Image 1 (tube, rainbow, N blue to C red):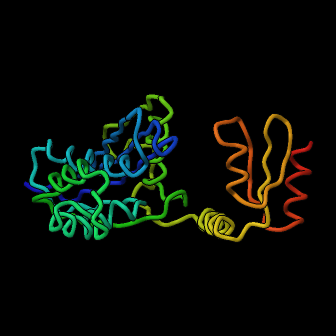
Image 2: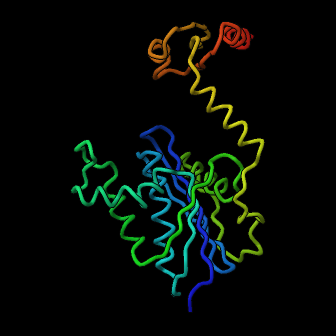
Image 3: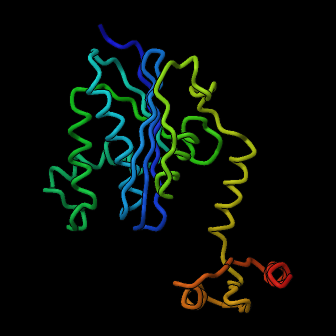
Length: 239
């Protein structure tokens, strides 16, 4: 007898790229919720994003039911484009990119292809850090593992799951606006960069200069978009 519905949320995280990382997944199957997660000591964010999807789909293979259509929600365009588009070209080209370079994370992509075989999967991208309940929970699991913690993973009836809006994939308008604003700030041309190292503040005209000062040290640094922004940062950090 087939499961009537299968919904999956996945996310990955790393502290450094590479660095310690973790992944999280929430799998909902006919009234049951199963949370999954894990950690690697030296990895990348992209590897953890892929591993989250692999783990969730591998878990389905342990269920003694025929599988209906599976809906997977991920905030990673790398995962979704990779498994729905890019892998076909990579396989055809002997796992080389169009630039004749070895495909990164080939081991995971091959495993990923394996766990998708025979499954009807609908891939849907959601925004990260914009209040989508399933994505938020997966991020909590992934970052906890990345930080070396051992989060409690739920496995039990959907009706007892603490996240009551788990199927709601709408964005929080305030968080989405904030994220858009942060992205615009990140892409904007810098007037200068301000750094704070050892209690001393300096300004830099290029990111390379700022990076050379802060790299490998306990430091604060931020991009200023104008002379007023630079002065504000210096004033705040001088308190």
